Length: 182
Image 1: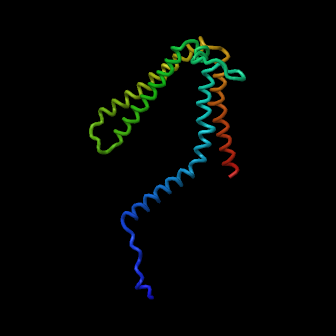
Image 2: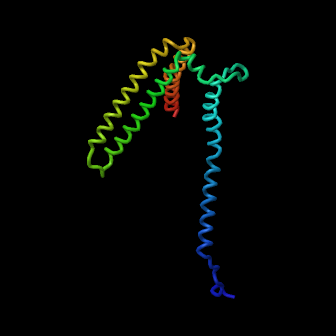
Image 3: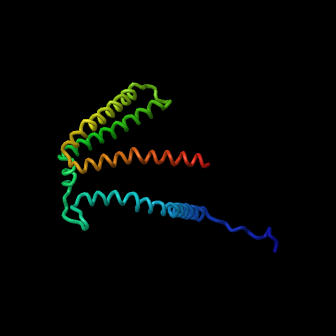
């Protein structure tokens, strides 16, 4: 028997499509399998603590969970629920302003777009909203500081100093040391 007499198996289009579909599914599952350990670690050490902190802050918590308090802990800390609403409103204004600025920047950069007046108004309005939001936060914080719990405000001051002061300094020194040792 010669090689020329043997016929190659004929694969139908349906079988070929089914094979491609199985291959794509396998590749997708393989990708998820590679990403799964990182996602588990991020969820375990990043996302879960945030939600658990919110859960704990809504209860009277000593060694064991106590009564449900809702936002009572927050009102004790800042003095009034309206201050919390004002801070949230200022943050919402800042988020809206950033979206407005981003949409204005995208339109101004596009070559196909001919009229830029609307986008310039969006950019100016967005930056004005940024200023309004930041001024609102700057004006609200001293009011909260005056009415809130003194111990909580002192711990907030220390936390902000640590986050904005010491951590970046440590990063800079670490990077300098890495560059010097390279």
